[in-house]
Amino acid sequence: MDIVKPEHYFDLSQFEHREVFDGLEFVWDVLKRISEYVRAVLKPAVKGKVMDGAYVDDDVYVGEGTIVEPGAYIKGPAIIGSNVEVRQGAYIRGDVIVGDGAVIGHVSEFKNCIIMNGAQVPHFSYVGDSVLGIKSHLGAGVIISNLKVTRDEVVVRINGQEYNTGLRKFGVIMGDGVEVGCNAVINPGTLIAPHSLVYPLASLRGYYPPRAVIKLRQRHEIVERR
Image (tube, rainbow, N blue to C red; front, top):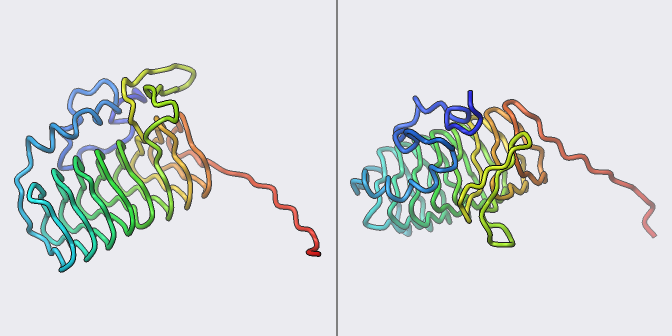
């Protein structure tokens, strides 16, 4: 299977909005489609519960069983699936698709991204210009960096081959079932294949294969306090 294709990262049969990936040569090109796709299919409605103190824009769909807690802010256009938790302090900035059963967490920000079914971003994270696969999970404080300090286009390196994505803003393509430990930093243009495990505090860039364990080793020295 081609490691630059969406199918290498996601079981799209489980995702309602799989059409956004149709015909893509490179999985990251979906980031160029999100805005147009959301505007094309969006039928604004609130079928879930929006609690007092939450804000939901007019051009937003909120599915059945979804709860938007006080202090959450959803700016459209956005599609929020069924049985989603949008927790207090969450900020959705627009051009966002959230699959069924996902967790959009406390003091976390989302823009131009796809959060697939059952994915969890529970607290203190930034997710921009990225795709998180089915049942993926970010530990507290995980930050996805979507813009290089040099502000130029993101180049992806996979097995020694370089791909210029043509994107200035590109965070991560994170496959189904990936677990990322607390306070990790994911640098622009990272690709993590399914069911990989990332240690806390790790700094990631490049491509990681399926079922990889990405370890961070630290050396601690204990001395007597004076």
